Image (cartoon, rainbow over all chains, first blue to last red; front, side, top):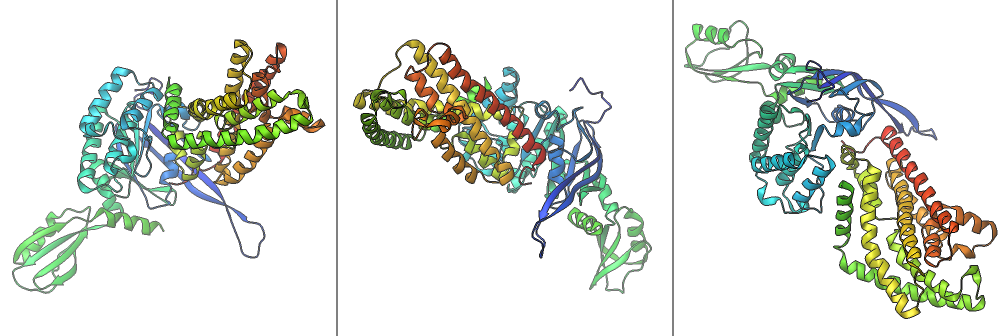
Length: 326
Length: 265
């Protein structure tokens, strides 16, 4: 924990953040390329408290990576403010680097030609991790991530899953306060994904490491994050608990009713019939409403053989959010 | 500690290419022999050209061959890794680390240079000594001064190669600039022809440019052409260029990370 920051101050504090890029493009009939300014991120405000696990999602090109680059200090904002752990990332990039960890699904921070162990040793020197602490951490992560057999294998010979686990270990050896994960489960099989999520959850439980996760795999979010920030066209379109996304997205749940006999569409307050197939009918009702009155109303006026409720897929909810904004 | 580890790692990495190393020593030696006969013919016509005698001239040839890879005269070395990482966007990872890029790549390049010195440097020197009886440093002090001059040569060459690699932040690819810079290096380092033979203002200019640090200055130190305060001035010349160019590396890097977008999401 930092001494420069009080307990109540958020770990990540983003205010009215803005980043524009100058793009030159060719215009027909003109000799010179025209300069255009593109708003990659604008009016972005959010805070993350220490110990939170936040999903940061949005379609390709929404500004996710741009935000992460500004949070880590490798890109300078063109407007607004960022503070991470009490530091100004672009000004104090090297100082901040000691306190954060970064994992990319598609890039490796390990050295291609070195055995995993040598990569870790280099990192120990780079982050000046006390030897005892380093050994503890290494033993623990190697054990949890089941990397014992791979320590002497050159990174280029590791499987994607092994490399990913190696990368996560590499990002955590220096006990970072924040871990940024960019598509950490991309390309992994179901078992590896599950193990990785389990590990991240345990990490957050035990060490209180703050996680900021960008992903297209919404199962990552469902498994890990209590809170999601949805970004689209460079600004936040939703910030809140995962459950609230449903209401925000105007999504609905589906009550599937199996009647004893075929019947005309059911009429009950608060729900609408979407589909009828023989004795089976699909009734939709708002995702944030309780299912109980709808079920009661149906059961009161019809002979019901069976009932089930389908939760809305979060993919659909988010797709809804994106398309509404566009 | 970290930088020693980085240098050691680079040394080991380069040492895995044994066959290439042997082929390289062979090539250096062939060129050494060809240049030696050409220079011998030249110095037969003019036995005191540039203040060198025939043995100085032949020694100069073999030192040039020995320095060629050690200082990575044509470009390349670990700065090529940087250019490639800028091109692919992996440089973002380097920037996430709590360590300066210039120091990191310099350490790595010194490790590489150490390997090339022990192989591509010592190999041709031994052959030159056996076949052409090249002269050796006349005193331990001269040898020490040469060692210092050699390290400075690597640092100056590194800084120029680093600047060239940094152009890929803007141009996305360093190769055009690298070819151009390599051509300058070959001409102005004294690799093709000792700078002491350059006439008039061209000679003065060539001896003031940073590339003089590559071959001309270390060779003159080896040959004992600089003594006393002159020796200090020669090494000082290299130090000044090393400091100025490393500062330029820092400046350009800062500019690059401020103004330029790191490639890729």
